[in-house]
Image (cartoon, rainbow, N blue to C red):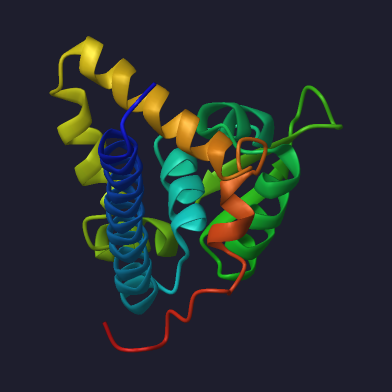
Length: 174
């Protein structure tokens, strides 16, 4: 039978580790919020809009399906984001000459200006640093974050609509 002091130690350590994990998660969320606000202040774009615009601008022509696949966003999310980018005059949709059912997306000059004006995003910095980690550490981080998403019942949530939901007040000063 385990002693009471051992059980208290195990409970305290588990509780302390959970608190420290939640604290680290809050720091990540805060960094994301600050980065989103900086992007909105500089360009008027949300992180999802910036990612879609960057993907479109990186190619001569691309379909919405190709953008969705490249970014791991749902087709519905891409449609909504492209609608907004088109309203802003950053991208254009044109019917595919060979297949009239399909649209081709391309970036317009104001879209390239917005990309150039964008501050360094958290995604860019993270990706660069993450890519320098050994593959075993990348896999470990991915597994831990996927497990965290599962613990929070978030494994099936499409993150892009949440980023653009307006729940974060990006107009407040940083």
